[in-house]
Image (cartoon, rainbow, N blue to C red; front, side):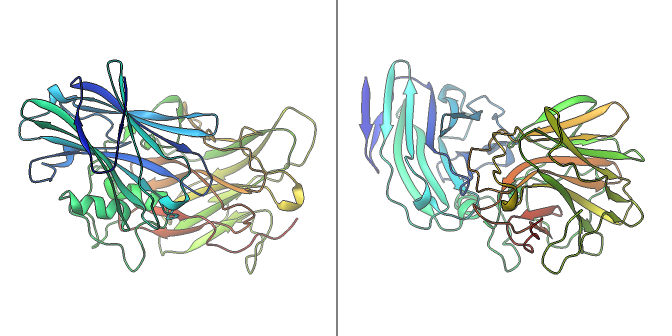
Length: 414
């Protein structure tokens, strides 16, 4: 049976178990995350375990489980399974929310839909019209008189994840002078705190964030956007190798963020008021040379890292100048591998790229340098269509360096 539920309406669902699915048309200008909050009668979380998101995808009780998002054609699908029979004591409700992490607002999200499935029953939820909201409470699942019910909400917040967290009693300090929604990394790091055993730079502007237990990995590891960071052993030399299928001429450069807050661009070509710099500090970060359109099925460019305490983070960037023609990261299967030459290699694939040839820059991930190892975080960020501006780095209030796309100087044509 298929049922339609209008905004503000509620209904009883046929089973305590089921799934919530939210879908929309993909676009390089939007980046949407799903977060669920387990709430008391007072509409507040009981603690960190009451927030379900990509870095904590399952509640301790098993009442809510976030499934990795997937792409079907040009449609992005988010899904969360629920079992209201496993709701912990004191919890009566699960609120399922969305945040738009590129600050474009939900007015730019096309074909947004939500549905609840239980047994053979489907409930379609009609969305509202949105303007500049970048956070939405989509739907609530709740217990009432021994019944499981669903209410269609579609309430928007201009303050995105910050607004949602405050609404549900999660204490978050505001960012310094900047909107929390400047980039996906800024928003998502509100819910992430580096492992306390790691030597991360101190700050007096710390936020109340969920703990993250970083896993020190060995062997060959693959990461995709949405997965939690990993940490690898720091060796005397680490290589960042970017690979792609032949057919275009990508160029790789690295953004280096230093202990004193400077950004240094290591690149074989310049940008506006930024001259080429092949090597930083006698090879601490070094570009190993440009690779052109020669023969072969796969192209690679390499950046070597010989990290010292002056370097806090390194961000490799994949770039295709407009003068090179097409820039589709999807078509050319771009990937980045970080190898410490001691038995560990971490690869990040551009799985969320599309065939838009007017997108010229991709940031697969970021490397944070700590005394305990190198933290590798998958980002997979893309520039705006037609933009040839470099990214800009800044220190976030979460004590981790953040990437702001399209905020740096314009690359020189080659």
